[in-house]
Image 1 (cartoon, rainbow, N blue to C red):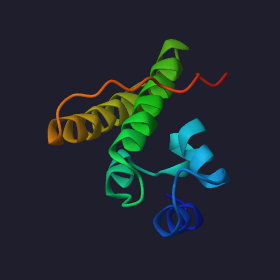
Image 2 (image 1 turned 90 degrees about the horizontal axis):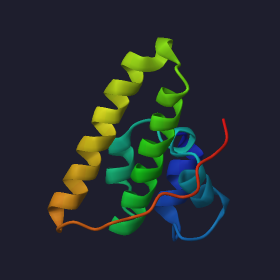
Image 3 (image 1 turned 135 degrees about the vertical axis):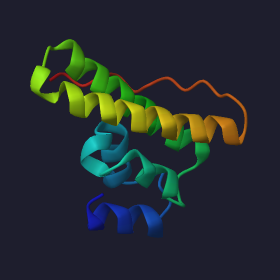
Image 4 (image 1 turned 90 degrees about the vertical axis):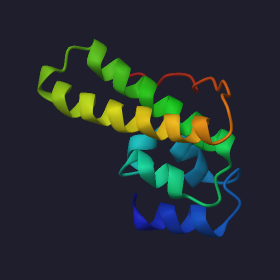
Length: 105
């Protein structure tokens, strides 16, 4: 995750500010790895689920566009996102979170 976004999320209430909106709208830009979302202390469980779910949808959109050069990387990323979602969901039962509206690519 870029240092300035991480510093912001760790030092302020994450439900406010442009950096948090960036994380919701483009998780791959705001975070380097899905585990970075899990370790962010100022994000609530619901916020983490929402960001991870959005990231998962973004990867699915890229895959559906037939970007074959990225297919292996996207498969690995999708596995990491799935593992992160599972770890959060298993920690306190299942919770359904809807992704934010998909971005146009």
